[in-house]
Image (cartoon, rainbow, N blue to C red; front, top):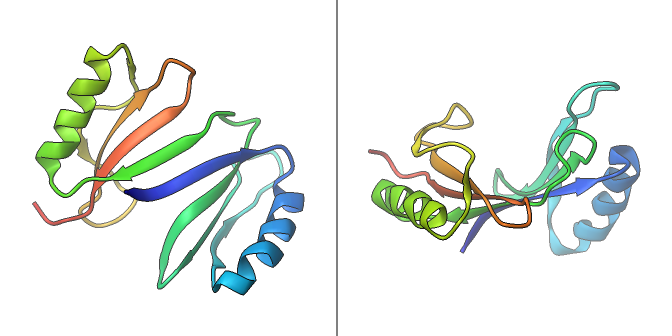
Length: 124
């Protein structure tokens, strides 16, 4: 169902320290750390090389971000079309993204301002 979730936090350093401890008993570790004073900061947690839970500096974007798994690129496009038809706002149409190989995604802002994404990681 979920590919990843990005949670905005008010103090990235404090949150990293908390989640490092909280998730360790579950075998979930911090895989990516990008913390820079005055710049966009985030940290990604996961298992088996996939960061599925992210913390991001709330001052940068301040909304919840959920990435839903899609089995095909056509499903990503249909998600985007359905989101706009339901009253969402376009935040990036279907297409390849530079985040990872074969990362095909689309983004819609929901009525409360949260960033919803569908992503297919399968090749073409």
